[in-house]
Amino acid sequence: MTEFLLMLSALSHETRLETFRLLVTEMPLGLPAGEIARRLGTVSTTMSTHLGILERARLIASRRTGRSIIYTASLGTMQELIVYLLKDCCKGDPTSCATVTAMLATATAPGEAETAPIQN
Figure 1 (cartoon, rainbow, N blue to C red):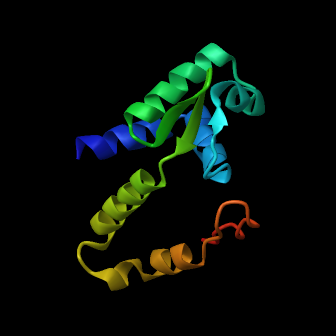
Figure 2: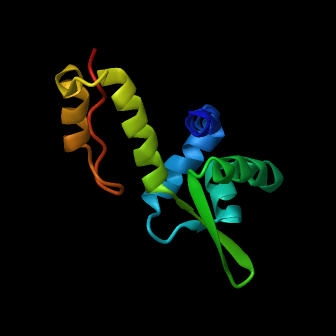
């Protein structure tokens, strides 16, 4: 459970959530730290801290390409987090989360038009 708390904590900051969302749209190539900072309007040193937190939570991965470090979203880790939350939510009864699973089934892939906001 500690690993899921680490993931949720990492995503609980606006800049880190926006960083993860940006990296999802840039899959599979990813972006260098400086470009992420530029696009989000964040100071590079602050961005490095955010990237470190996301990487320790396994939500992003990095690789060295020449002199740059390229960051990519770790979609497998996000899937683990979603499954963990859904299992807890559904309490073993998949019909109690039918609305959520239907929304996930119709969600658009990165780069496609976003879906309409969820209506309460």
